[in-house]
Amino acid sequence: MDDKRPDLNLLLALDALLSEQNVTRAAKRLNLSQPALSAQLARLRDLFGDQLFVPTSRGVLPTAAAEELREPVRRALEEARGVFGQGRGFDPATTEFTFTIASSDYMQVAVLLPFLTAISEAAPKVRVMAKLGSARMARGELERGDLDLAFLQVGSPDAIGLHTLPVLQETYIGIARRGGAPTGRMAMKRFIAARHIIVSPAGDGFLGPTDEALAAAGLTRTVSFAVSSFVTLIEAVAQSELIAMAPERLARRYADRLDLFKAPLDVEGFGIAMVWHDRTKDHPAHRWLRDRLSAFCNVTPRARR
Image (cartoon, rainbow, N blue to C red):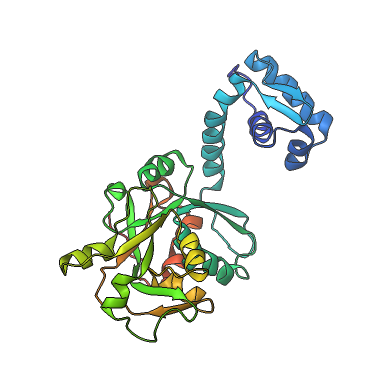
């Protein structure tokens, strides 16, 4: 691009076209007429010496050159918005802001959904994109800006070097279909004789924390199914003779469909931490989100690194 003719509006136009892949929708997003956006596209084609977008029956398709520009354009606009936003506060009641958060499906159901309900009135223009996250990918996504915040298990090596704040400590509780478990503690004999289902997100086997506790006592159980999702586990238990150990915070949200019981042995729980990158450390909107999430989880917001 000819650096003698910089024009932020052209970057905004390119970003909108890359996102929408439709000239009409991109123009609406930019509050421009379609001819005005078409004129900007013509300038972009001239500046980059490439067609950039190929017409299709459903809109426009980015060329290879346009795809190569996607990430540099996103970064440039993010930096520009940061410059123009310096010194501005964040008012959740009026400011439009979108956060992207990675977590397990357990955290989405047990924490994020009730959290969003709790803040919806105070922050009507705040949006949250919740995505299933991989601990191994979190660092790169946070560094690139693809994520603003991630939830990882406390002590995860993937959190090293990132800002970390433990937000909750989870315990396990037994679950069975309605009418499928006694009130209180299940007898060991019945527990190990039952067919169990566990969550194995990476599909790496049929053993979990409960099996470690049983092995320490010289016992084993029958694990018939391993699934990748806690929500799938809940559905399976509610509709079958299977039993499971589930995070208590999640299980109690489904208490109208399940019997909850105490296991006949202690199973070690786990801690969850929020992690974030330096790039969002001091941003007022991100500080607001972290403080509200911390308060929601009943944690004093004091991070460590």
